[in-house]
Amino acid sequence: MKKNENISHVVDKHLCTGCGTCAGICPVNAIEMVEWQGELLRPEIEGTLCIDCGLCLKVCPGIHVQRTKVGLGDPFVGEISAAYAGQITDTNLLAAAQSGGVVTGLLLYALEIGYIDAALVTSQDVNGSVRPVVKLADTPDEIISAQQSKYCPVALNSFLPMVRNSNKRIAVVGLPCHMHGLWNVGKEFPDFLKNVVMRIGLFCDRMLTYGAIDSLIRSAGLQEHNIAEFRYRSKKWRGWPGDVYIKNNRGEEINLPREIRYVIKEDFTPVRCRLCYDKLNTFADISVGDSYGLSESVEGISSIIIRNENIHKLILNARESSRIRLQDVDPYRIVCGQAIEERRKQFTLFSSAWERMGYVSPKYNLNYNYTKVRETIDLSSYENVLRSALSSHDKKIAKDEYQDADNEPCVKTKDSANGNRKFPLVTVYMPIGSDNRFIKNSIESVLRQTYQNLELIIAGDESNKKVKRLLKNIKSEKIRYVEKKSTGIHNFHSFISDHAGGDYVTLLDAQDEYDKSKIEIEVALMLGYPKLDAVYSNLNVIDDNSKGVAIVWPYNNHMPEDLKLKLSRSGNGNIPLYSIMMRKRLACDLPIHNMTSLTLDNRCISKLFANRKIKHVYIPLYRYRCTSIEGRNVSKRP
Image (cartoon, rainbow, N blue to C red; front, side, top):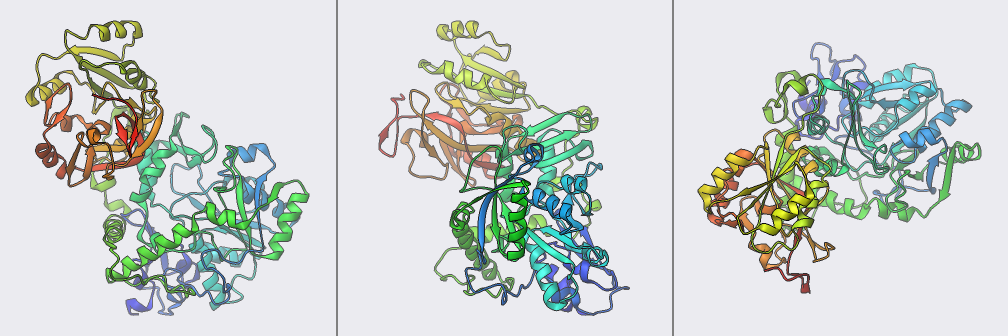
């Protein structure tokens, strides 16, 4: 059979969603879902078994989804008969849920009353692997074990033969791509899924590759084979919307700040997710997701969109039976909270960029051509994102044929090999001059960091007697005062080489402050990306009272003049030196001529950063005290 007549055509066009519908519909089991180097699931056809029937291509939601019977309304919203905010009433299950636990509560109730006999769900079992497993859960315990979204490739629909042959009434819980596949199968074979009585769709901003899980595990200072449990979003630490939770094989529990998850999302988003419009899972009977726009309760609340009247009756009965709590809400609040207008914009721009690159977009039969924008609109930034994803994720190499991230083995220490966490030492370098009005604030911001394996080196001279007295009162073993003998770029090199004991070096002006999670987030990223040379963040501008008054992006030209002097234009954009954390070897190459004011040689530093791997954190982790911004006086900084 020719490639364009089977599922290989979809893979070659980079349109595969990894949903597994092709494997589930193949009548001779010739298709297997395998993990590629780019940490995605892709179908592989066994040529000796394939009978060239073409069914895999007919039902593939990666290339087309027929919407003719879904309704003529807004395809980004879908048909809505009712909308609620809800929670499961069981307090233990609510605490373990990702949001409000409504999916778990509804499944348990439906199983109890016999509305369903089992549910096709995804679980992350404690089985020595951090990859999720699909199961047909027919007991309450199995349903409970599948709580929370997995945010990674899941070939759910490859289990359709199990569903069909079970002779049970089945509920299916899946992402939009899974529901699109079910819709296509039902269109081609109306009786194939006749025992599927409920389709629960999860809101989906995007799926992430398996590489995101691997990166987060490295960020925790661990290795994959040491993990007993992994959760993208756990409420154990700070409640909803949850932080990354990891338990190693020694039983130690690690919580990574949710900000790390936010930062890495863009790096692990597959191309195909950029080309999907259906965030609200419009093909499902009931769509459920986070409560953005409805509530910020740390307990977690589910947003619920009802699209099927039979399921509407079921969920109302579950409320009457005290299994779940419901509150009527305006569906427009859910639509706004899920930023659907932004999704519409991003879908349009990415799809248009994809076609400008010469690729074919999925056929959704929408009621408007969203993939055509004016030729005068610059889509280069969107094209760059798509090219980067192609080069990173769509690599046709088996998982066991490559090493770790970026083909570079992770640093393996004795501790990390036996399950202990790795805590690299961080050196904070603080040069001081004559004005030290805020140095106590600066020092305290270092000492209250959530990451504690650090040292603070304060570089001063004999004239800084007040600072010395202050340090005696603080009495911290993490602080060292070192008298610098002279200035000059070579002296700075030798100073860092001689005095910095850390694997990573970061700088702090004596008038500025750190956000309390700055070092933890940046160390996690340095560990998560083995080839990364440095990471830098946005700046939070503060006044004399340490009150935040503005957020400054390094790419923003409307920033204070004194702050512009601290930035260096390079191939990576504006690099704010103060907010940067770098490997020690890079710090030793910094062209700093004055160790007190950190005067930069822009030409040298631009050259230094030009060919380095540097990551921008879109979170204000450095608190910069400056003179003015956008016409507002902040403080008088000399």
